[in-house]
Image (cartoon, rainbow, N blue to C red; front, side, top):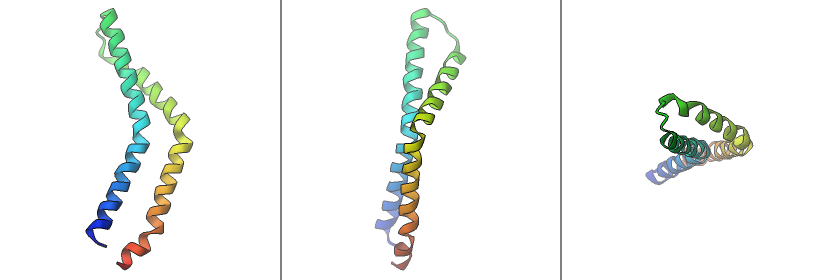
Length: 90
């Protein structure tokens, strides 16, 4: 196993992590910005007000995107385990 293979494995792991976490993080960020704007408009300064909408948004995105996320994880695991023999040989 050389440096090129290690970098490739690491890059695939980071890319897979971004694919899996991205939709939920984007939903939480969008809801957070929306609630912050509403708080600024109405001058309600409650710090805990953003938690419930963010949690609901993340759960909704997780439920909707779960099949796609499972496919991404499966493809990554199949690729990682399937190529393990070739990586060990070199």
